[in-house]
Length: 336
Image (cartoon, rainbow, N blue to C red; front, side, top):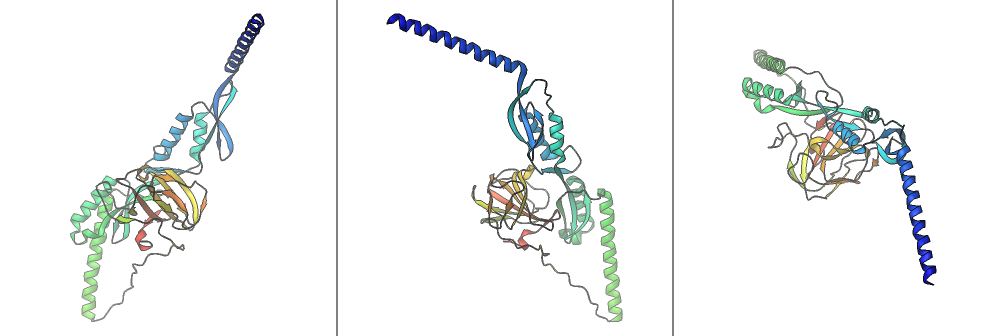
């Protein structure tokens, strides 16, 4: 009985050894002729193979944050993000990370940032850099002390660059324009008095321009920063509203539309951008988490994200913007 057990044990051990050797040979053969790499797809289409998924994705993320080094690029909005799947391919298959990156990058939309000099609510000149815009503001304030409270800087985000002027040109043109207005006003006053006539003027309405879409408050909370204000972490005029509440507070779509961006965007942190048609978009920044993806259709009141403090932020809040054709409007004229 013992002998039978020993014989059986020896056979079992031999079988295990043979099985182990076979598995090892198979692994060696696979390693010799095949290699593990990532198949990459974009919008369901195979676009290549990557040997280093992390490095490739890090390069794409960096590109989304600042573009390819072009002047004034604030961020790049991708139409779609690549998907990765581990697979084994023959060693003679060449990986093409650079080509994959180029294809992903080509689907992106550049958003440029620059600065508008605003006088009495009207954009008068566009400056490439914040430092130059601040110099223009300082000089105009000194030259035109009577109107210093009506001159400001507004940061713009557009998909196309406009024509910039130098700080010297901006100061010269705007100061000249101010002097012409003063002269015209004086001449008009003299003419009116001499002729004893009452002139008529066109009433300028301060009413908010119609958006063609009805907006609802996306979140409840305390209004902590208004449109146009500056703060210790913001040198330029505020392009939206900040509404504070606890982290995780649901953020809802202000109106029905299509999600055109959902991800991380520089100082905005995690954000969602919804397009409502006719150039109208709403921005939801500093979110802790996102509940929607690019291309998704959302309805008014649908939860799209959770409140947080990501990006350039000092506490849990929602940064809300309303933009029409890329230009920021005051959300308080429509909400809150």
